[in-house]
Length: 631
Ligand code: C2O
Ligand code: CU
Image (cartoon, rainbow, N blue to C red; front, side):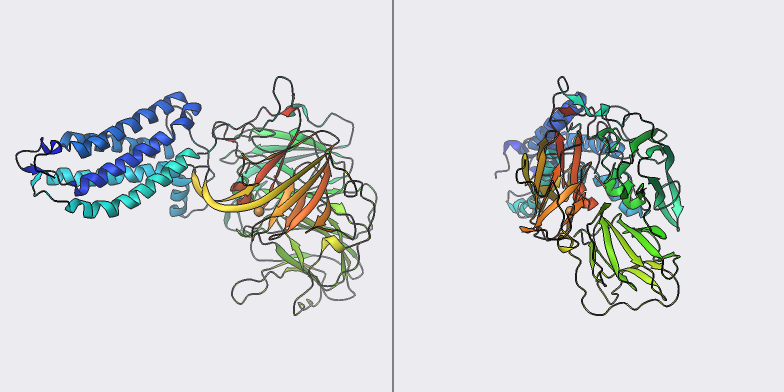
């Protein structure tokens, strides 16, 4: 390049600015411009002034970047630096204290006390695009700062600057590419999950529990921050798990949620077939309850069994923080158990201490095991074993099994969301133990002793590999109108896959049903009275307990083999690696219902879909506008 190219004419005499730093700085600015432009469509629909601001900023940066290369001049560099510093300042304010105008991003529940974790969460919770833009801007500011400080110098024409520019261009282009991808896939602003038209359809908000004369049981659950065993927890009434709600079949349950948390929340009644408006899903059946507000849920305890409740707003964070508890509906007729207790497992935040349950020799015990959460990315289930007495699995997910046989020590796989009801008679001497025998890395074989019952010596753990409890071959066959149906009104397949990608503005291990992640996942449309057959196909190496709200599924087959024992009725189907489960349910509960993996990170990474009744719509929406994020 000659010493008198147009780009150099402003530099005095034979001196000029070296391109070695200008070109990378201009590329960084161009990258920031591209990311600003990539978020324009989203921001235009969210808040017009923001959209225009990003459009203008991106255009100005792009123009300055080009001018900086073709006509390098001090004034251009100062302008680039000025725009970059301004953008970084606005971004920092918006990510910390919030801008005093326009919509602000999602209220995130920042947990833990590690400042680095908190910082990362604040920076990336919804804005990989913002983080990368600011980094690129910082690079341009630093490089141009050096250029200005050095000033123009006499230099020979050479292409030496290329030697530095090409290696610098690669990471800059990569960062810009990632930023643009993130910008094009932002957190949703306002997604309404209705499939019906609000002018002709029925709003789900009228689908509440109708008044009635059932005996009333009222509870208050105050969601509040508390120190539990030295841990900063989010609790109901100060305890983790929350108080057990134990009612009788036929009673009317009224629960008032009072929110004293620093974030919005809801309560979902996991497994219970209640009216849609009582289901507690943020952005679908209600707005999340803001701090300081309260909300009342009401439903009739129509069926007995073991259920549980948990937050269904920002579930991925709120449940592990401690927002869950047991819901037990005792059957109206007498049961013949002397001891009836609940064990909630999977709460890795609690101290490693076993629950001791008093029981005398010869007493009949009903142990209700609830898996509230386990957060391995692989979704590995707990592997429970009962030792010390032969036992039966009398119910799964709250629904009785027919003719359950006696079991010796077996491995029961139970994953998040599932419930197993165990029954046994206390032996003449010694204790009965409920332990998790899941293999751990390292030398420890036993992860957790969950419960000991009775007194006397602890029975030894069985050696060697135990058989695995198989719910498809247990108990006695009986007719099941749903599983035995020969015709289904709706048949749907949900194939589960995963891959790394950008979703909700960040890199995620994206989880998908039929190749799409929530909220773009397929909707299973049903009418009241439909028999619906579902095929759950797991294409991954992970476990996925797939939970359907508001309905009870009958298991038909696993891997194409029909179940042979008792009919099995579940709300959470544990689909193991590369398994296929065939299930069916009767669509008898109109509304908009979620079906999702109960490994909370999988759901948060997109493994969630909808079963929607034709003609029903919701007035609520998911996204940053409302702050409702059910996952
Ligand atoms: Cu236990 Cu959608 O939840
Ligand atoms: Cu999963």
